Length: 251
Ligand code: HEC
Ligand code: HEC
Ligand code: HEC
Ligand code: HEC
Ligand code: HEC
Image (cartoon, rainbow, N blue to C red; front, side):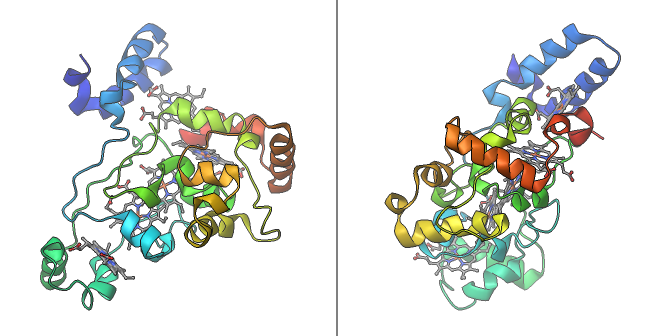
């Protein structure tokens, strides 16, 4: 069944948005149910790429900061993908004969960008913004899974509405502060996790950080964490009552 709807998942979702607006909830629920099947979300499936780029190699073993390649992630709504020049800053000198890097050299010589296949995409009628989430100290892996362990990138979560709302309805369950680095901005803490992971190994992290690093953090119900979370909600001025309003994500 799901197979039939797959190529048009986007228009299905759009259609259901219209259905909702004109008040046909049965149709909406039926279609929404279909679009929620695992075949449609493509979660956990590594996606073929023109170059077998490994985050594990580059971020975990070499320790390159996410922002070196995803330059706009803390400043704008988009994280952005690196240009061929970024790859060539190293690969004009190392691994220059690797056959795996042939498409990169081709791209550089012909001045045509590499066509990466997008792993994560929300439909056009959904508004998303990276910078605000990073500014609140939410680690990449909470949303994208254990990127630092990925040989070939896959989608770490469903990115469906219910998944976004789980956090938007109770952000205090997710907001954390690195107790070993008081005073560091929440934004720096996001990137610091990878650095600490590389330096100390998984065993050197707190349990919460460990879950984050593994892409397994789904919020805390521990009383102490929640108290801290509520404190941070207040400190950041987050209006929790409005964070799940339709207009936040659908303009
Ligand atoms: C050396 C460059 C480089 C670094 C460093 C890097 N990335 Fe990437 N990233 C890429 C490239 C190239 C792609 C596109 C190919 C792919 O999906 O694997 C990508 C894709 C992604 C995607 C999927 C994008 C999509 O298609 O939806 C995510 C998520 C991501 N990176 C997160 C991270 C995180 C988190 C870090 C830091 C821990 C990081 N990246 C560090 C180069 C890099
Ligand atoms: C900061 C330097 C640096 C940057 C920037 C960088 N790489 Fe690498 N890359 C390396 C190093 C070092 C290795 C070898 C790692 C090893 O095997 O230990 C490597 C290995 C690779 C390999 C495996 C080659 C083989 O034959 O095994 C691929 C593919 C690759 N990089 C693609 C990319 C792409 C695509 C980009 C740009 C998005 C990129 N790299 C950016 C340093 C870099
Ligand atoms: C709150 C969840 C969340 C967090 C935290 C998050 N992302 Fe994303 N990311 C998304 C969503 C949702 C998309 C799809 C956006 C779209 O389709 O417009 C995405 C898309 C991407 C893409 C694809 C290109 C783009 O700009 O859309 C890259 C690369 C990426 N994220 C990297 C990162 C990195 C690096 C971090 C951490 C510094 C990070 N993300 C943190 C949810 C998140
Ligand atoms: C782990 C928690 C978490 C997840 C998951 C999450 N968000 Fe958020 N989101 C937040 C927090 C915290 C804020 C900041 C609220 C503030 O500071 O006022 C926020 C803010 C936003 C904003 C407001 C941006 C602005 O400019 O005011 C949008 C839009 C948004 N999120 C969309 C999404 C979408 C779409 C998804 C799912 C694809 C998502 N978020 C997933 C926690 C999350
Ligand atoms: C935190 C962000 C967020 C908020 C708030 C939000 N939505 Fe969504 N909504 C999404 C995302 C993400 C999708 C796309 C899901 C997908 O790709 O399957 C979506 C999809 C939809 C769809 C298409 C059908 C479906 O379920 O996929 C409808 C209808 C919809 N939203 C209505 C609403 C209404 C009504 C509200 C207010 C009660 C609302 N949304 C609040 C993020 C949000």
